[in-house]
Figure 1 (cartoon, rainbow, N blue to C red):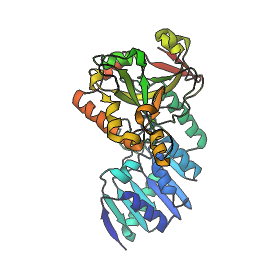
Figure 2 (figure 1 turned 135 degrees about the vertical axis):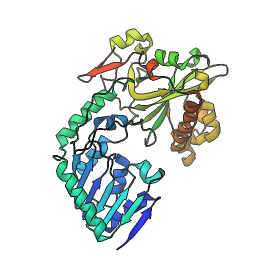
Figure 3 (figure 1 turned 90 degrees about the vertical axis):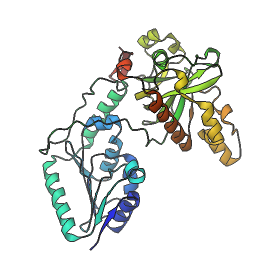
Figure 4 (figure 1 turned 60 degrees about the horizontal axis):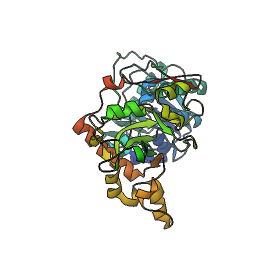
Length: 395
């Protein structure tokens, strides 16, 4: 028998628990991300697998929980049920180990956040935790099916493709079972720290650089970067995956540079849905040459002017060849261009390294803290798309 308190190293705590006994795994966890599930399954698929989580579709739209994590759990043989307003976190491994913690099954919670809880192999504690799980499982309705999950995937994807506009409720609803807990409204900020991909997306051309005094609201209104990043007619943007972070940047002058003025969460390009419509081109005629989209959602922008953004030159000065993924790879191979100032020439976007993602996120957050962000009321006045039958219109 043992009992110990834990405040660090939750990734190793779970890895040790799976290695010790994966005959059966039972989880109670509100928020679940795919990378953490991959970590949990790295030691092998459990003999039996039950998961109680939240089925609030807003959670998935906001990115604090992943539908792809539920898909991976289903594919790994897990039975999954949903409870409304769930906050508890309980991890049971076999019949001899219980973990109660503040940590959700997310990479941030397991690796970066300060979380606290305990690991117990005391039979009385484990039995009590098992009873809690069994009672909650019985209240949690039916198991999630693959078909039902597919409906949620389509519903959330359609909502995100409209840009997740501010000051408008998503209406996605909560598919969980009411277990007798009073309703509670939880504010969920967009998640930008678990992405495996990040890009700087450029707006403008070198012959038409903007003044640094241009307001970010006017730049957003002109570029439409609150819901779409545009790419040239000659090439579709195949590189961006769902959940990638796109840092939005404008070419400026006096002196010449590229100012990062916002960030958003990207979506994989889908032909037709993500091609400029006639209505889109009427609003922004230049889209006839830049008709392909990477849609973005939950965009946020530094308030004031472009001068309040982050200069791309500062990133390149700080990290040199480690600023961009292509130059970092070339430096590692010892072949090809390693100068970041040449890497993005004639490109619509450039992919960042993990180091650069962290650096830009930190610097942009500092700018948000100093200057504020564009108010939701201002963003709500802009044009936003609607999506239906896989196609899009702008309203």
